[in-house]
Amino acid sequence: MELKLDEGCYSEGEIMQAVERLKDAGLLNDEKYASDFIESRLNTKPVSKFRLREQLRGHFVPDDIIDDALSSVPDDTELENAVELVNKYTRQFNGQCEGDELKKRVYSRLSTRGFSHETIMKAMGEND
Image 1 (cartoon, one colour):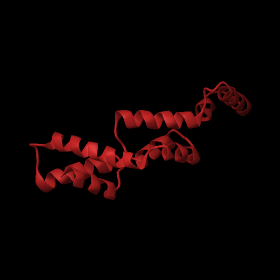
Image 2 (spheres, one colour):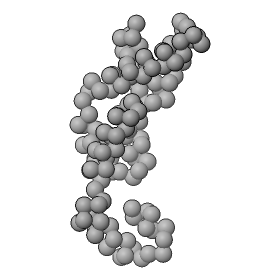
Image 3 (spheres, helix red, strand yellow):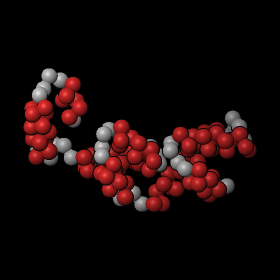
Image 4 (cartoon, one colour):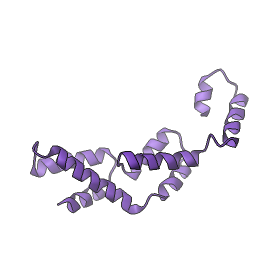
């Protein structure tokens, strides 16, 4: 918010007052924003915790708040999301390729979503 206001013709004092008023009104809350963002993303498009962290950093959420918000995500969610994507991409690429080429494409898609090699391999193993 500070960066957006700083782009305008506002003094530092005006910016700080505006930010404080928004915080006091409950309209500027990084903890709630991070929590809501993670919940929304996990419900709409399965991604890794790594990717969520990077996206929140892109929104200038402090690392300690990101860590707290991500700690509420169960550990098995990462693998469940990866398995869901393995199934999705296996169906999507079915008929276009098979065998090693299929595995390579599925692996690549999960990798771009931020999943680690270990998680992808586990998810692909569970899909067999």
